[in-house]
Image 1 (cartoon, rainbow, N blue to C red):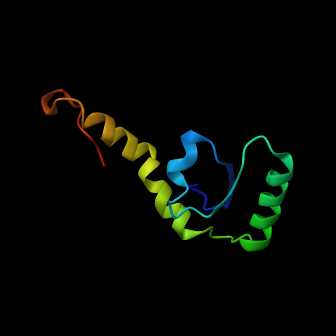
Image 2 (image 1 turned 45 degrees about the vertical axis):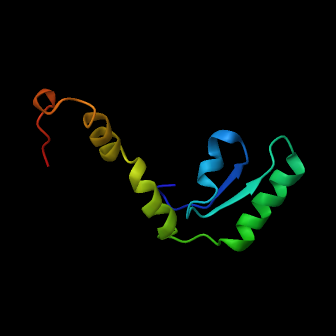
Length: 87
């Protein structure tokens, strides 16, 4: 996601929350090699490779960066117990 590369994903429960996201992705039913091949072909035809990547996917992925993960985890730690954040 962070590279902005189009994604081919299967419609399995853990990933369904991302189906309505702005990710540049194609979705297919699981356990169906023919549908997977069709989704890969569709992705290659619909989303040509961009050197700079697709901004919508890059922007969406920022929320999952290590920096944001650290901040989220630290939000559960009492403020006086948190390490100083440099930056």
